[in-house]
Image (cartoon, rainbow, N blue to C red; front, side, top):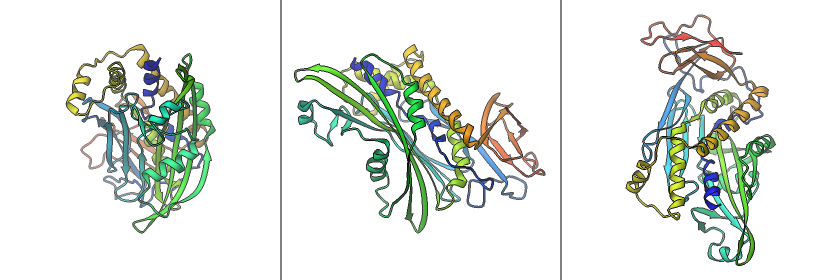
Length: 389
C-alpha cells in the first residue's frame, strides 16, 4: 500500500494549465510600451506581439525535454528542474521565472511544498512539527488560503517587508475539478482545495501588484499500528504560481500570462522516467542518494516504455489541465484558437488581434495593424494562420 501511495503522490509534479484560473477580465489595450511587445521590420509598431516555442531540457537529471511552452520573444527564463531525492514521493520539483526584460512583468512558478501529518503520537515524538519525515516537512494540514498566507508568502517573499494583502479568494472550481478527476484507490481518501491572493508591495522603488495561486492536495490513509488505528496524511502545496506587474496594470497583462500557461505541455517521456525514479526509491527502502552520479545510474536504468499506470497518471493530470482550461476560457475568453499549418497543430494565442502568423520554428506573431506584413525584410517565412472554431 505504501508503494501505491507514494506513486500516487508522484503525480503532483507541477503542471501549469491550471494557471488559467482567474476571474478577471482582459482589456483591449493589453500590449503597450511597458509590456511584452516585440515589433519586427515594420516601424516598431506597438500592435505587434511575437511568441516563441521555449523548450526546457532537464540537464541535471534525465537529459531530455521536461516541458515546452510559448513565451513572448525576448522574455528571460531562469530556473527549471531540481532533483532533490530526499523525498521518494517527489524526488524532483519544477520552479522557474519568466521575466519581461523591458518591464517588471513576471510569471513565477514556485516549487511544490510536501508535508506529512499523523495522529500517531509515537511518530510525532520522534518527528515533531518542523522536522522532516522521509523528505516531507511535518505539519498539520491547512487550507489553501492559509497555505498562501502562512507558507508561500513567508517563504518566497521574505525579502519584502511591506507586503499588503489586497484580496483573498477561494477557487472552489479547482477543488471540484480536481476532486472529480482524482484517481480513486481503495483505502485512500483524496481532497483538493484552491485559492488565490492578491498582494501589493514596494520593491526597488517600484510599486508592484502580484496575484499568487495555490492548490492544497491531501491524501490520507489509515493503518493498524501498536498504538491502534492511526491516520497518516501526505499533503502538498502545489500548483503554486504568480503573475506580477506594476501596480494597477496586472489585469492588463493577463492575456500574455494566460497564453503562456495554456501552451505549457509536460513531456510524457520525462514524466515516465520521473515516475520510474519514484518507484526505484520506494523499492530500495527509500535509500538516501547524495550525488548526481548515483542519480545518473538510476536514470540510466529506466526505460522509455511507459507503463499503463504511469500513463494513466499522466493522462489524469492532462485531463485536469484541459478541464480547468476549458472551464475558465469559456468565461474569460482571453485567448482564441488558431491552426498552425507549419506545425500541423492547434495553438491558443491572445485574442483581440486582427491577424496571426506562424513560421517553421514554432514562433508566432500577432498584429492588429492591417498593413503589417512580417515577411517584409525578413529572412524567415511567415504564414498567416486561420482561426479555429
